[in-house]
Picture (cartoon, rainbow, N blue to C red):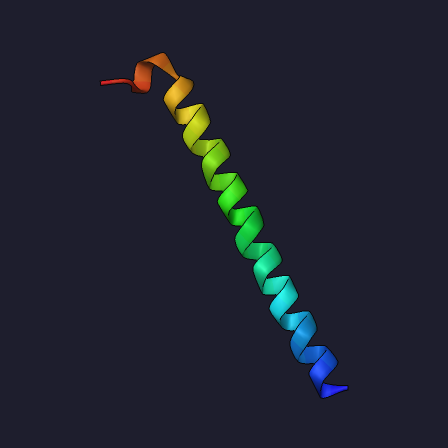
Length: 39
């Protein structure tokens, strides 16, 4: 049971990391596509 809980915690953490990475790349893409933000 404890092993299952640990596995669930690890999977949720990796899930959060993955979604954060996707969010960040999407934000960067939006940021780059904005003409006002270009130097």
